[in-house]
Image 1 (cartoon, rainbow, N blue to C red):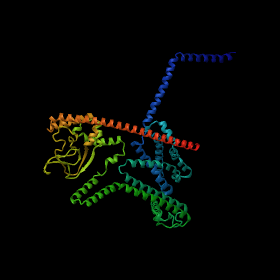
Image 2: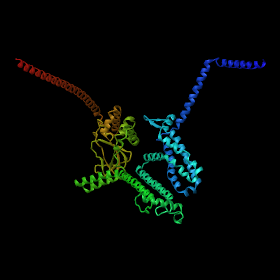
Image 3: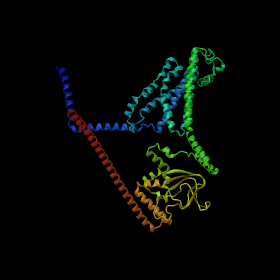
Image 4: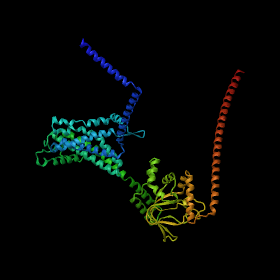
Length: 583
């Protein structure tokens, strides 16, 4: 009886304990719910923080860090594509430095594994925005074919050397060659980054040729081993011959044979067996196809490199022909030719507007600001102007080059442009053209007052001095028409510029105060007349359109009436015909 009661007593006490625990937990349900919410919020916060940390390490394909990583993985891929095949064919090279090869191989394997992690954290553009969600990047990468190739390239197939022997390790590692697209990507990004793309393309082409010759040399030696070294005159001689026994001589001989074969020179021993004939036929076909494409690529590269020179030379030749046809003096002809030589030697033959035309307006404006804004701010009247006006003006600056002795402007000429000196020296000369009154250097500007068309100016917007180029001078030109077009969108800035110009003229004593108000009144009258003319033109255009529409409607009605009259006349004629027959 006691044995039966003891288990029952234990069960009852356990139930009572569970009941007390449940009552304590449910004593304040609101607090428990709040605790659960806090825990969930803390967990979500931790997840978001962790996700943000991972998002920080997402690389953009345009970053320098990504390009530097491409350099590392490209070196590993190039190592495998060049040394694996030569180690697989030349056993002596593989067995001579086994430890070195193992270290280099596994270092490259580590780089391959890190490259998969880099791919998982490389962003891409979606609707113009960089995707940095690690989960989405991972899913996108896994769906690509390259992810399968990357996985296959790091499979530890080389561990089979424990069974077949360490001399077969290079053959077992040929799956590492599947990372070749990374090397091509590195070449493409280097070509877009380098300042000498044509030279880089030629170097890349030479590298491709050397790799193909290298692979073919290794294939020739391996094929000779299969047929038997020294078995005939076509295969590689037997290694027992002291002249051909060294590793260096073996590789250089095979490289020489491969070069002669692929370049279709053909000064090699003739084949003896059918297998050798087939191998040589395949090599000749590959050589013809590859080197035909190489010659075509080299020709296109050279033509692209000389395209600028050819276009420039055609301009010079056309001008020489024109001067010869028009019997231009030899002195002037020599000046023109020297001017062209200066342009070419100083790389000033490129039309900046034509080059920048392919860019969107925003990028074009940023480049112009980067190049010209500091120069434009040196002009007195443009200091402290609105940023929008300066942006409009820098887009309208035009570079000009003047030869020694050229007059930029003469005293009394109507001022239609202003000039900013970028490089060179200009002289303010007297009426005799010899006396130098002043010298203008880089950063100076002149003609800014004359293009504002300020009323009351004593000079009447004409040049006040003779300015001549002492040597070859590079200037930026801003025309009066371009300035006025820009000021139409900035009327407040226009008033400020005109006031600043009046102040400058007043300080120099070149402003007639009496005529200022009259000029302003006349200008206001002209503006009112122009606005009235615009309104009249608008009304006239509206009346013209109404007249045309009404005339069109009348023509349609007349056409309809003519059609109805024709129909009625036909019906009447038929009725008369039937009535005559009845009668």
